[in-house]
Image 1 (cartoon, helix red, strand yellow):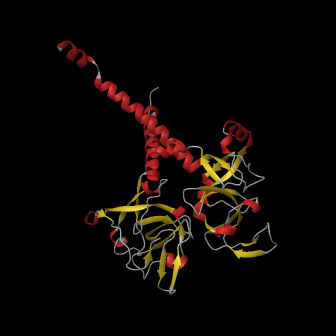
Image 2: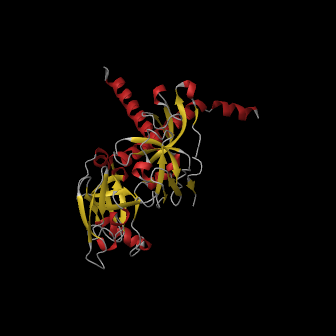
Image 3: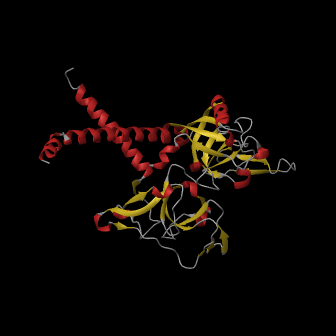
Length: 192
Length: 164
């Protein structure tokens, strides 16, 4: 018994604890760095759905999202943006900005069935977003102008090669005409 | 290598580490905001220099915001400013708007916010329901000044909201 106690006493507990703590702290710093870059600088996202054809693939595209421009207010008409859906705050959608505040936007109300169009002036602090594929997109024509604060990033890069690989490896991703949804590249951090 | 560089490097490394951890905690767990504007009197009073603790844990997938919570959100007309108001109604609820003598239903994904001081508060009675995506957190406690430290209670106005 006393031999065991002596052996336990000989182990350098304090050093082991110190080293374990510093390793854990290093991992925590790395995770925090990933979060800061992902949320404030640049991020990846997987986009799928029909509403942004032909710019973005139906089966899925990996895009790079610029968070800095959106935060600084440097979003203009013609930019593809990532925004929180005004109909479901848990979903993020990708649309194109068609009008900024003060612009008069003319749009086709129901392009598949009629030629009727409407003109709307975008109120202060809001933007008008539309999908490139107006026949299969749920956007400002249905839910109205959205506050700029819902925009979380500007899309600036697209990698179709990676999306083909994802399609081949995960055939269940292919949902024709499903509501567009987006998968954050760093979703594993949600568990923290 | 002699000189100030090793010390400066270690200070710089500690500052960067502290900043990263601080920003992450601020974005995901809790943050402290200074209250300006009198629209939430007497719950939050800026003339005493109130600072409020904002919890971000309610912004996860379950969206744990309840009716009567004091919430912080991005202003729908100025995305760079944060606004503090009380959440009165959730999607699907019917709310009575006294000024316009009407009853409105909150659309899906939106909510109705009002300040506790209705005379000076510019809120959903003017700009209508706002998307829940603008929410940035829930005020749980006042942390400064010391004589006002304490939890911020959930409160609902009487007889104006009918829940879905």
